[in-house]
Image 1 (cartoon, rainbow, N blue to C red):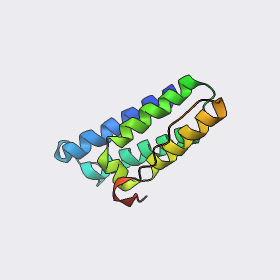
Image 2: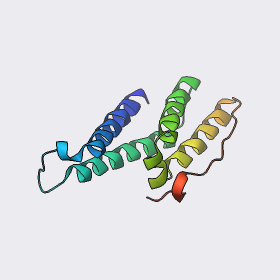
Image 3: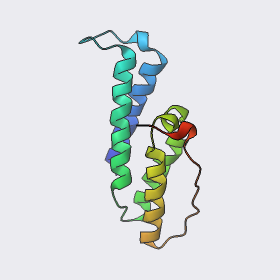
Image 4: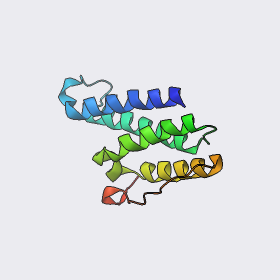
Length: 116
């Protein structure tokens, strides 16, 4: 899980950098900086969804999902664009139940309704 989290972090950092300064990217193969940034964000989203789907086998593995959930909660753009945060919250709750741990569920819907 740590390796997947690191890969997610790399892709999301790339996306945010390109979105912040799309003109800093030299067009290649007809793609703009914003298009490449969106591609990096989509890859990061798929990695996050994959992480959500993996059952945590220990509390340490749940921590990686919690760190990812907190990062997505702070990212208004991602909360508007997808339901990945909802998936992570459900996965974390299931992991806590499977591991016999207490978990306070936060049922806050994503900002903007969430669209893929």
